[in-house]
Image (cartoon, rainbow, N blue to C red; front, side, top):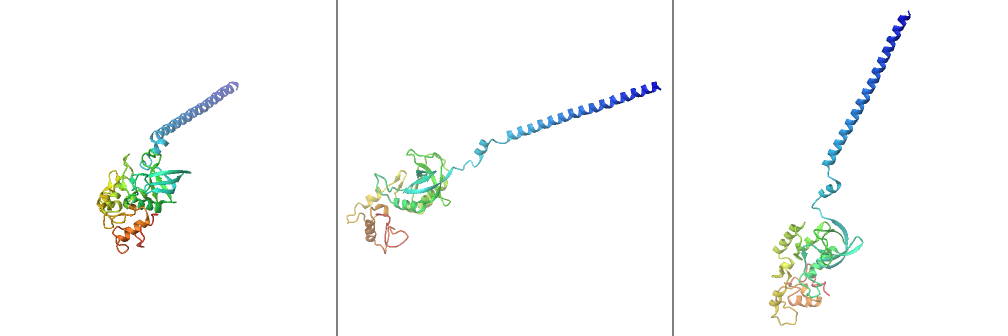
Amino acid sequence: MESRFRRFFFLFTLLFFFLVGCTTEDRVNEEIETKEQTEEHQETDQQEHEMEKSEAPSEVEASKGDNPTEQEKVRAKVTNVVDGDTIDIQLKGKEERVRLLLVDTPETIHPSKPVQPFGPEASNYAKEVLLDEEVRVEYDGPKRDHYDRILAYIWVDGKNFNQQLLEKGLARYAYVYDPPYTHAEAMSEAESRAKQQDKGIWSIDGYVTDGGFSTEEKEKRDSSYKGDLPFNPDGPDRDCGDFTTQEGAQEFYEAAGGPGVDPHRLDGNDDDGLVCESLP
């Protein structure tokens, strides 16, 4: 009886340790397997992260790639019109002078030059369109010239004012110092259209030159006039920029046949019989 009990106890003990051993081994194997899976998953995540990082551009690189041809534009308000191609603006709380890019209008306030033909018209047009208006300033190349003036296109109501001057024959395409310019082609084409239609500055033969505007030919052709008026009413074409006062322009206009006839087109588009009303 005792021998059978010992044998039973021995078998029971052996079975117990076997079961405990199996359970422990399974737990250890499970823990090892879990750890391996975790490490493998972490390694995979790290590889994917490194791959994404290598493929995606940095914030700086991404910003460089966005709209590479888009130039900086800022809001401003026009506070003063100096002449057709020069204005003053309020920009970021500071008064700044702007020289319009790629255009040159005839002089109206030059210290050593007289008022040039179509200069007053360009200046008046700038006042009409820009003065006291909210505009956008677009840079293209160097932001300032050697006079510390801002160099820019001026956009108003979605239109490039620089180009509008060319379209109307009130400016020549000039000062192409730092090409290529963003709007060069469109502006050059605008000048060509005005030239083909003899608009503004292009209505005077020999007036527009590579260096600016010349009135030498006009003065030579009018030098034989001996009348009391400053210019020959039957001579070369004249515009408001040739006169210093409204009264002088009015006398010339009437001597040339106005208001019935206006060969020099001094009365503009209103046909009211009063010419060059912007003059003093």
